[in-house]
Image (tube, rainbow, N blue to C red; front, top):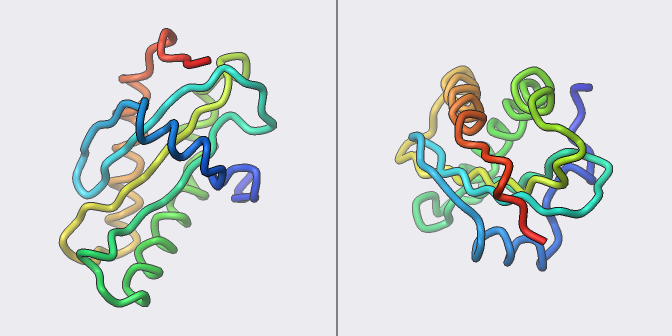
Length: 132
């Protein structure tokens, strides 16, 4: 299950607006996580979008490198640390990973921090956060 299909990517403009207007967030350096539960059926438990700010990284090569590293860390660890704890009956989870770090870190550091972020997120999940 080490895939990252189109259905798992958050592309819907409507869902993105809903996530950033009504969602909750927390910061665990170098990531800011925004999340929102929706009460609608979906084929996957979560949809994710990955952001790297243009303001901090002017060159597209640097932004793409960081997004690739974050995407790969998420892809490799989502099943073990993330999807197993999400129940399918809870609905759809909209999830945003924003990179707020000031430098380009290696993949191993990003992977370690993303796992720590997911573990912290699991402690924050509350079942009453479902929006209809």
